[in-house]
Image (tube, rainbow, N blue to C red; front, side):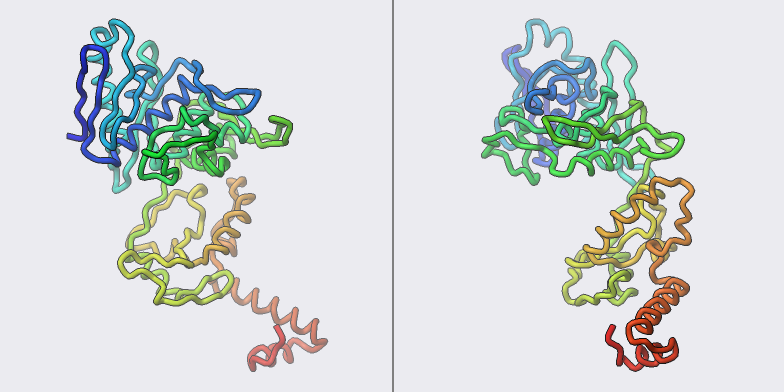
Length: 378
């Protein structure tokens, strides 16, 4: 049993969880639902404050009850409106069970775990969503659910201390100490929108359902983000599978703990043998996951992954963004995807030879001889 729901004095509810991670997940989903129905961004300062926004909710987390965390494992509701328990408790219990079983506990399909949730209300149809990751992506969906353009400031989710979710086991570390000043929930809102795009709201191509534009908010130029449809396009969902320890070690060893872009070699001894993780190197998908769903398995992971250092990995991410806008881009012949391909290596070597020959005013043959003898100044 993940939780136990109880009634106190016919006025309040409590939920007691068995694990801290489950209560943290519950509070986070409750917060996402509040973004839909009970938090509104203010034009004058950009803060999200209490105020009715949309007439929808994430199923399992309606406007009432409103939850307060009273210990590491227990939540207590506000005093519920008169008659709420007799009229709504049965349906709420059903919705709560659905939300916790599908969103918090997650559902596994073909070796991948998903959070499945619904947005809507009991007076109209619910829309179902399936997210591989359920953090910033869900928050971004809830912010953009009104299909209106929102500035970067809105996506950062600036909140007053009283509205900050009482979560634990997270980077915010605000429980039980608490947040004491206005604080933003996300530090990089563009990543939140990019993560949402990978869940089925493409930004490019004939099926695009999300837009990015420029505008002015609070006197500064900002990017504005907008969805054009609430419905998720599963066919455009980009799945990223976890890279198992044995794959990580195999990739790093194959590439001799060397970044295939910059050529810097790092120490094997820095790798954690228990996890296969290296502090300076990582297996990287040759073709970005938001271009092509990760289909790696034991038979093809060596072809799909390569070793990059963290700096080159970030460079690749920025450089390939423009290619990701083109559905017709030929990734199979892209040097950024296959830097270790023989013809690409030959081309880079020839380029170095030509640079050396021009600098030293010598012939190509002389440049090759200097490079082979390691007598060059390159």
